[in-house]
Amino acid sequence: MNKNMPLMDANALQKMIGKRILIGFTYLWQDGSFCEQKQMHGTISRADQKSGFTVVLEGKRAGETYYLPPDANGFKVAPPGEYREHSTGDIVVNPDFISEWTVTKPDTPPKC
Image (cartoon, rainbow, N blue to C red):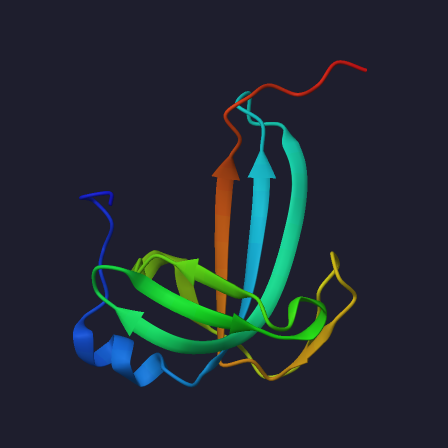
């Protein structure tokens, strides 16, 4: 775990259990160029300061589980409304939180 990551306190984590979350990932190549975006959504079923969040996914990924770190920078309260996942087409209505992450892939873009 990154020592610079601002962890959420135990009370805040417990209040997030049962809340709905929309998760978005932007993947970049090592040179900073765009690779792809992915989205998913679900309900937070577990939250812990060490192991992070367990999210039970819904929609096209129903039945899958996803894990997120307990990083306070990765979460914000979602404004009310409808959100369309561009990668799946699922529509998420009034999620409680949005979690956005940028991931740098370990390799370089493939040559065309």
